[in-house]
Length: 451
Image (cartoon, rainbow, N blue to C red; front, side, top):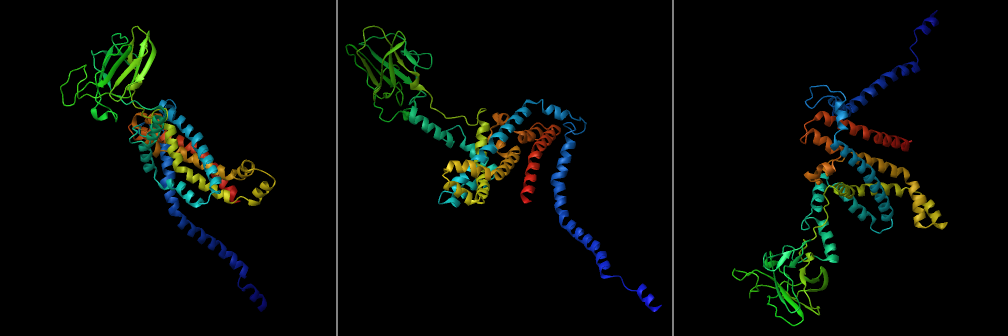
């Protein structure tokens, strides 16, 4: 009887006590984890979830936010020419920029491995990543300026152009009306009366500042007649300090050197020459008859001003160029990291088998780097869909609509003068829907790589 009572009142086993404590420990672990995760969840909800839900709801109301319009904003979005242009420009960005960046990053990463100062080179290429998009936009806005005295790109283009083509020394010159020269088609000047060998011409031009005269310009001298020769002088018909007679060569007036002069007969050029330092010229060996003397339009052509980088035709490629300058280092560093993990024995085996560097690059390096290249490409696709700063800063006001993308169009419609936050919210939802597939793809790749 005593043994039975002892059995019935014995304490529970250690295994039973342990199993009872496990749920309590698991509960405390979950509670502690929630305490640490809660601030991040609150921030995520406040900065991501709530704005997304609010934008979706706001896109269903009109500009004032008081009238429910359903899907009208989404319908209007695809009827608006500016929005369609933004979609087109965004598509250009998505197709061009990530492909160029990935290709440049791959090429540079491969080449950097073969140079001595690889780290310094990588640092130089990666430095633009430390520059804010605002500062980069201002830098390239100045670099693309049409004035060659301000825009470094146009300064280079103008220098190359002038080195091969030359430029006019008298872009502002014009003939004085009623003094022997008249304006011809195309900007040239011709004598209003016919001339013959033995005649003397005095061709005066105005509109040239004395300080703008070419170096070596000498005082003009009236030409003297010579049998069988057509002579003349081209001079600046202006006397510094005043005085002088129009249409005549005065003592203080300067000749205009380097001006091309042509003799025309029946509309065709039969002879040509260039004025000397004192502006004099002469045609010898002309047959008897009547001629017209012409100063071609090339003498007065305006200077080459370069390329309109920020015009409607080139503004989007110009902004993409600025984007490439910023992000090429990023792509190069990521691809270089992947390149450093490639098995060197495979590359050496290919070299031993006789493969050249191009074959190794195309058939071994690129296939082995395919996962890294895909991640870089998709990451850049996500980034270019959201590009805003560069487009808004670099594109001037008159061509802002030609360069607009979805992000800038969303801001312009909502806050930049449109004041239609319903349509702006619809554009934001569209941008989110376009970005989501790329984000999901990237997340799945990361998870597969971790496995």
